[in-house]
Length: 114
Image (tube, rainbow, N blue to C red; front, side):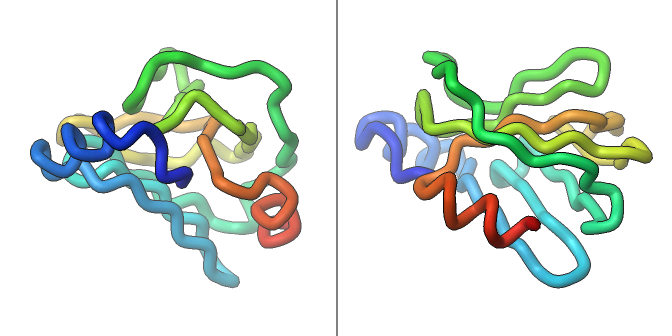
């Protein structure tokens, strides 16, 4: 994830909410410390696209399976997932069918996932 605003970075550190994206051959893991976590099997990733818009909110926000997880306003990428994947937000189980993330280098991230 991008380094983001230094003030936000300090605030997230104080709250033990460290943003992290791990890409392996088998799985994409996205987490915001204790507040959000999802592990998406690579086979469930149907599409990955860059997103032209920016968001000014920070954190994990979602509704009906569509989640935005960011620590910066952009750049953003959208991942479509089928079948839906289980995750957790604040300890509660969720279903994720679409995940929008802030990343430092969109081209490198897209290459890693394709």
